[in-house]
Amino acid sequence: MSLDIGIDLGTANIIITIAGKGIVLNEPSVVAYDKKKKAVVAVGSEAYRMIGRTPEYIVAVRPLKDGVISDNDMTEAMIREFIHMVNGGAMMKPRIVLCVPSSVTDVERRAVVEAAMSAGARKVFLIEEPIAALIGAGIDISKPNGTMVVDIGGGTADVAIVSFNGIVQSRSVKMAGNKFDQAIIRHITQKYKILIGEKTAEKAKMEIANVFDPTGEKKMTIRGRNLLKGLPESLEISDKDIYDAIHENAMEIVEQVKLVLESTPPELVGDILSNGILLTGGGAMLGGLPELISDHVGAPCYVADNPIECVARGVDAAFKMSGDLLDGFEQIQLYNFK
Image (cartoon, rainbow, N blue to C red; front, top):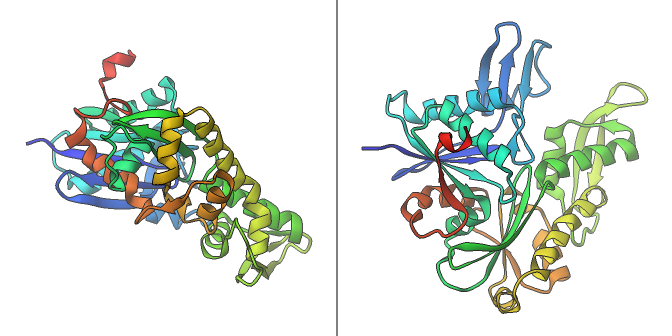
């Protein structure tokens, strides 16, 4: 009996599924590394709690940037640890399906595959995020009927039109959750001269963001360091502050949606007007985003049920559908790259 593991290798979170069991792990994509001992100290939630709180010789890093691997060794160590956690230390080498952005290059594919092989995979398959997101959202992509998905993760936003099991048009932009957080940090620093951490920025984005029609009534208190005095300070901000910080970033995703629609056959554009645009990924929960896209594009826009887990559920289902998927799913053997 073979062990089939699906990995949604996200910039912000890693979600792992096991065939027959569904989602078995959902952890932040963070590794804590001890530079003195040259060893991994922690991965996932434990490592995430260490961000900004460790001595100099321990670094908590995110080894994935903009949807792709930026640190091979750390990614490999992280995947190995997570596989060990869900595998219970079993000796069986699993088949692994990994999710990649639709615009990923051959070099980036190689890095992902080699990380998985080094972490103990017997066979590696790759599936593109838009395909996995639609399958995971329960959309039947086997019909010649156009469906549009906007999958917004931590590092990339993938916009694609899928019909008859294949990607018709797609674009990927490195504008997603982490860029929104950085924009909030930058705005608060420039406007109020207070430096906040990325966790605080993420919390503000999740709790009070509205990129469509902020009223100024939603407020929250944040804490940071006053750059002029060098001392801790609390500050009340509103949804208008967040709007000023990230509206431009949100419009970049809207522009990608427009560009994909402009190069799509008219029959499929008609399907999208009636089927609507599906939002998946953690970024889909950004306040006001569905309304913003719908307002600029003219097609209905809605958020999938449990959008964060859509891609992982699609990866889990992909093993059974591998023979049907015409585009966006492929078996990779390591020798292809050598």
